[in-house]
Structures are given as C-alpha cells and as structure tokens.
Image (cartoon, rainbow, N blue to C red; front, side, top):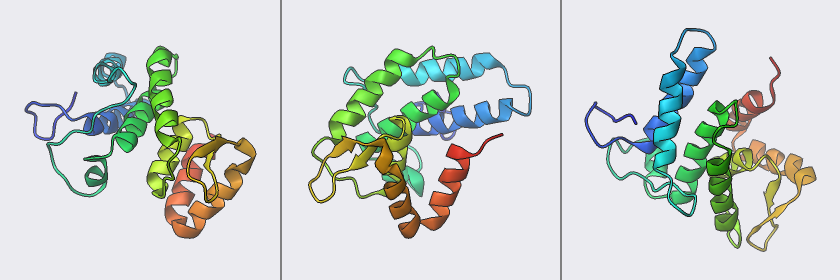
Length: 171
C-alpha cells in the first residue's frame, strides 16, 4: 500500500487512488502490471470478513479524505470501485462481491443524501439501485436511474457532468 510520506502505515484510500492513477497511466505509458496487481492484492488483504474496508484514521485529513475518515460505507465503495475499475480480467470477483454485499446491506433501511457516496455505490453496484422515495432504504430499479441522475445534476451539475462523461463516454 501507499502512505502519505513513505512511512508506515499505508492508507487504503490513498492506495486506491494510486491504483487508479497507475491504471490510467498504463493506458498511455509503460507501467509494470505487477505494480497494479500487487496494489490490488494489498487493498484486498485489508478487506474485513463482512466485505467492508475500515476507514484509516491517519494521514492528511483534508478535502475528499476528510469525508472518508469515519465513513465505512464510503471507504468500502471507494476502495472496491478502484479494484473493480482496474480488474479487467475479473480476478477479484469474489472479493468485489463481498464488498457489494456489504454495500447493499448497509444501504438497506438507510437514506443516503450524500451525492458522492451515492455515485460510488451506484457505480459499484452496477447502476441499479436508487433511494426509496420518502421511506429510507433502497430498491433495485434500473429504469429509475435517469431520475436519480437528474436529481444529482440539479444539486451538483459539474460533478454530474464529470461522472457522466467518465461513466458513459465511449472511446
């Protein structure tokens, strides 16, 4: 794993971010595939038996990291999504399914109002889960995703645009 200033302990969210950076870089420049595989393995070695990833409490606490510091759902979705996005061969399917199960169970009975956590969970779960209107909890309704994206667009238009460009753009 990666740490803020090169000393232990490693930080899961920073490592997940680094994993995606190396994978993106590999599309345009030579990156040793062993670095990506080793980073994926390290992240997955940090997964708890319930499928979650415990938030790290050290390191720099500012910006996006602050929001992850105490949020197991957001940390789990972020780390699992980084592994999912970089696992083109499907080698980590079982671990990703455990993370998805944790996210599904955590979302049951809760209303998530944070659009960033919502977008992470939605992408990790494949786009088919939306909040139950006024009831708390989530339901599997892929056809309702357009409504969820429109709601996100009204509240955070720049974030929605970037998310949509990354998620749905074709090469």
